[in-house]
Image (tube, rainbow, N blue to C red; front, side, top):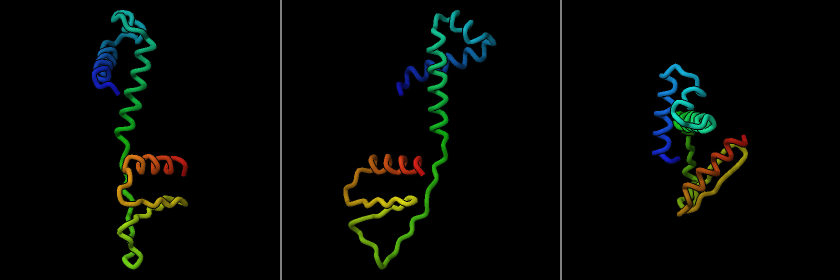
Length: 103
């Protein structure tokens, strides 16, 4: 998200809410398009919701008898993911998010 635009629209939305004017009236007085206002209000709210989501850590169970230092296996529901040395952590994160959403 473009932080300059995000900050600018966050200030605009706060100003509109503090003004007591309707969104249409405030946008007209400030030479802004109403659809842009609603777009940014939703975008900022969605971003705020995403950033406020609680991170939940899951327990890790390691069996010393079968532990392999070369491979890590992660089980999420019915899915098992094997991670080799040098795995891409960003890709792993995306896979976990997709699995969590599907379960």
